[in-house]
Image 1: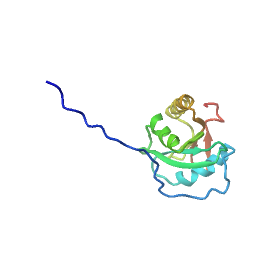
Image 2: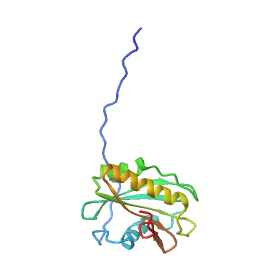
Image 3: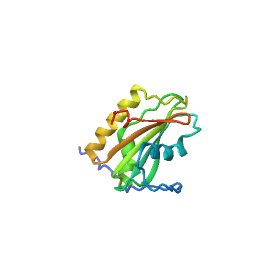
Image 4: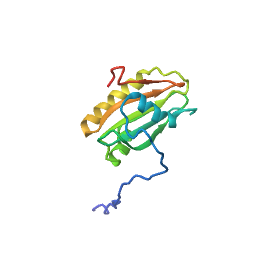
Length: 149
């Protein structure tokens, strides 16, 4: 007896613009610039939010995606979820970032491991991970400046 035919969905992928903002700096030239952009999204959040900023070849932001919202003190981030919006945005590079609701900006072991995995995945698919910024209370830490990228 043969099995019945399997139905396969035909799909297309697209980004859906939810809103926009004006970025007067035009391009991200330093970790401080990345922090100023990310803090617009991450300040005053009561849970950890992990965001991906996709950049063009001139380091101009083209999209920002809230990739994951975690619990009060943890977030599980997978490279495929991070890279999805970057690929759909035709990004040359990305800057990722998240907040620490505690206000402390020191990276956890998991933060460092996720950063390394993202950088490795980025190398494979051709999207550079320029930085991972952790936003604390009116301050930030750049994992690139700390030597983790």
